[in-house]
Image 1 (cartoon, rainbow, N blue to C red):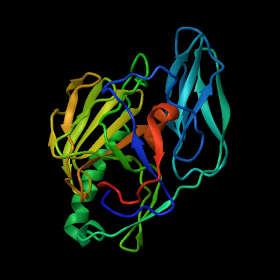
Image 2 (image 1 turned 135 degrees about the vertical axis):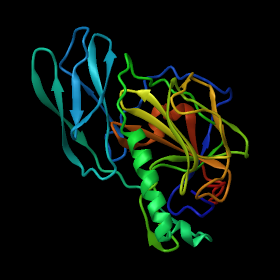
Image 3 (image 1 turned 180 degrees about the vertical axis):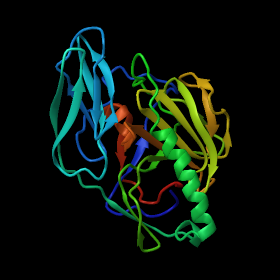
Image 4 (image 1 turned 90 degrees about the vertical axis):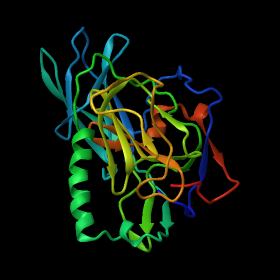
Length: 293
């Protein structure tokens, strides 16, 4: 989440001429790979949605015409092969399978001047541990919702300076993969809720800086980091398009941007899947220097 050269990857330009455009195509897009999303058509009809679990975590279920379908977030650590979900209806309990395909993510090498952001002190580690529990609690929260809030709008306009899934090496040391999308924009640019939700948590965190987490219901939670200013409070209901904060460079960042994460059934998935690829992203081969991460 900082300025660096991207190795074996491309920059993407976020395209959207009018802020707040709603996409008419079906979203999220199905991409059953590690870090992707599987949409599984269920053997269930009627007015009551079934209960679906994947890896012992409850999964989102939405209506698809006269049938129900599960929207499953697939962890980055998942190996290619057969995965299983458990389905419970009023009449029966059964399992269903879906296939996960392999996917290669590029590697990025990052140089940080602030050594503590690579090797935190013992005091830093205690703070990080406390903050991690708070963030994890928000990301894993399940809030019942009548329907899934899947019709996202672009939260902020700018350049996607670091895509999802990059294998990161900080100052020569391997670290966790990038589990969100970094969108670089001028400091102070408004960040808007992509869909209606409830503010699950806010905070000023060691790595993430000023952060907002939005609970959209049924295990769908979005996260926005590195803000210059937070504009909402925990427990507050927000509408689609409402300003929740402003672009900044707090936490582990060397340029103004937001790290946008999407958690589905407590799994960080690729946020780009919530937009049709042919309408939102295009490849930009002109440069290799990020605009701030």
